Each structure stands twice: as structure tokens, then as C-alpha cells.
Length: 79
Image 1 (cartoon, rainbow, N blue to C red):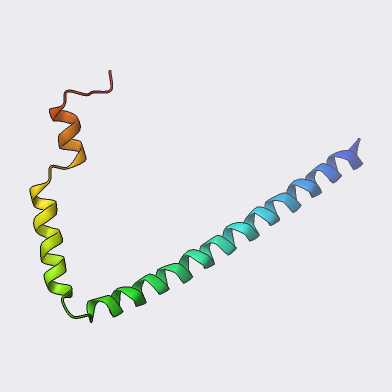
Image 2: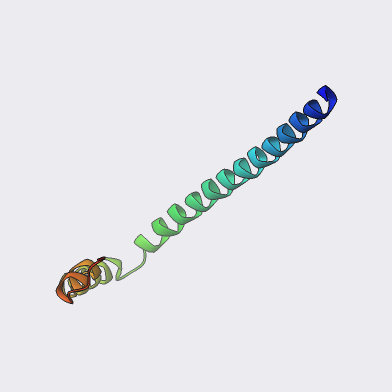
């Protein structure tokens, strides 16, 4: 009986190690993506017309009601 418990414990430890490895890999990938996005953002900021495009987007967002406001004004609720 004791051997069976030990093998079960070993199997659980192996699974936890595998999950830990996968999570570490995902964390590394997310860090790589973050670095790439920051780099692309810096490149885009240097493009001609960037400031004008940002101002247009700000105006557009200010004119459109947010999704939350639309939900409230339409009378939809979570009842």
C-alpha cells in the first residue's frame, strides 16, 4: 500500500513539474511579446502623421458612447 502511495506522489510531482515548465515557458513568451510590442510602438511613434492619427482617434472615442453607457441606456440589465 505504501508503495502505491509513493508512486502516486511521484506522478503528482512529475505533473506539477510539467505544469511549472509550461507556465514558465508561457511567461517567457509573454515577456518576448511585450518587448516586441514596445519596440513596434516606438517605431510607430516615429512615423510621420502619428500625432494627427492619435488626435483623430481621441476625437472619435469621445464622440462615441462607451459600451457600458449603451447597455445602461438600452435598459438592459442583469436581472
